[in-house]
Length: 187
Image (cartoon, rainbow, N blue to C red):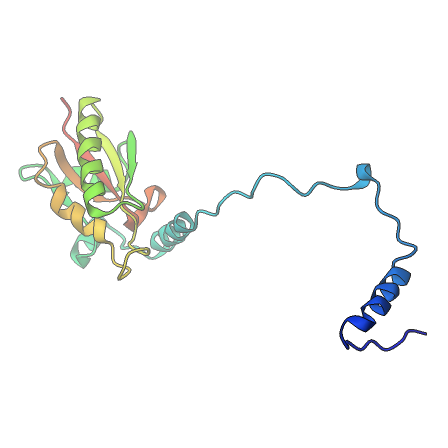
């Protein structure tokens, strides 16, 4: 029978040690080769923003306006068509008529960094003779007021650029409301 344990200072600590020794007297250490090493590569990070964007794209594909005209009338879709060009160009761009030849992802960038990245990307794309590119601006879910800051900035940055003929919100398969397809002048 075990003695009740009372902590009355150092004079009973020898009794506590003896109780412990008796309790573990028949314990045998594991052999080294039977031990399992728990070290391994850390798990891959979860792309939370990408998951949110994909969910939003799915939602948008199910509940988005039915045509480019409906979307334009709602005033929420970011679109631009250089003066003198046919609206058919914008419709084709929106429907994914052209293959997206290159892409720029602005996630995690501030306005200054994003402006520089967009400028470099568009110049390089034009120099390579690319016709259709995508700019992923995100939906603003990580921004201060959960507003799409970069989306709004792109509305200002893109139209004055000589190489930009048109742009519109990407179809759901290419990022939906979190991305733009941009039609560029060829050389």
